[in-house]
Image 1 (cartoon, helix red, strand yellow):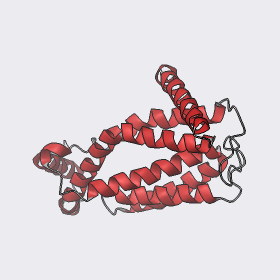
Image 2 (tube, rainbow, N blue to C red):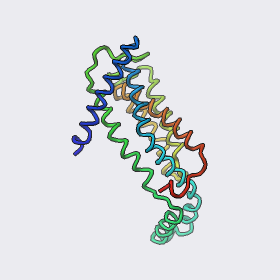
Image 3 (cartoon, one colour):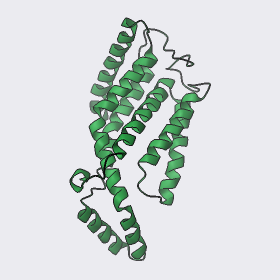
Length: 222
């Protein structure tokens, strides 16, 4: 099933990367790094409607977080009652707690596909970019650790932007996830780390812009 889903996306990604690289050649600055950056921005723009839905859901969850905490404290000794009251809170507020997860699930095949494309791509020339000698190289992908550091920092910022409550579990994930991403960025091809960093920068900008808008309506949060 995964092959059936990923194969068309991988083929599309490979074609797009080749197309964008050829554009850089025609522009006189042949660069697979620039091609990966352009491809990342294009993907984020295509998936922007999903980002809107995700942020609206997160904002709605943040709005009801104080009431949810009250319910959890009030019925901490009665889990069945607690679950019932939380469900009623979701219903009355018109919030679907799963709405924020769906956009992430939809984006996962794109991330997995770009991983395999960058790792197994047939480069027509040496895929160097700025201080990176080879974007396809693994372990260490970036000897200066700039990309892994940026990957960790930007992951922290995007996670902080979408954090809906200050529970101990969320606080732990807020710090653990950037560390994991930074380590993966060090181990995996630098091209993938570049993709992740650019994607996060675009995500930060999109979420910042969306969080500037007034509180989401009940209808938008569903």
